[in-house]
Amino acid sequence: MRPRRRTDSTPLELQLAIGLVWGHLNAYQHEPAYDLAMGCLQLWPGDPRLQLMCDYAAAELMEPVDEARLRALRTPENGQWVDLVLRRLQYQDPAAMGKARP
Image (tube, rainbow, N blue to C red; front, side, top):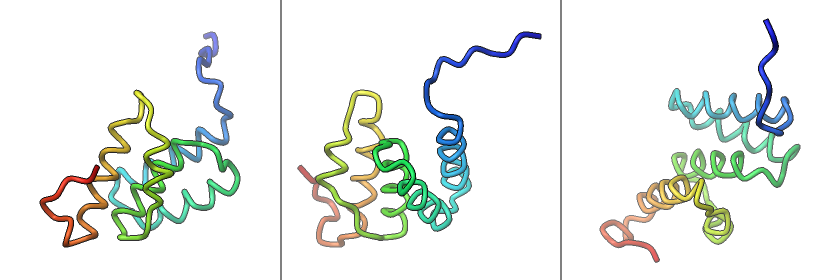
């Protein structure tokens, strides 16, 4: 059997890290996901997938999120992630309930 061809050029270690963070998020384990993502971002500081998952976990834990950086990460591929995190951030601020953020 031939090995599968990798179409993704992401290093294997980074793929594993993303999978581990995603696994925690998928199991609603936001605190471990946040801690792991923060550690992974020290190794791969420019990875938008890790940053988005870290921001999502932070929003779930009511930790601060840099909204300007979050909005700068928006691309056609991850725009829904950005929107999700921004919606979750609305629940942190009771005054913002019912108001849409720009």
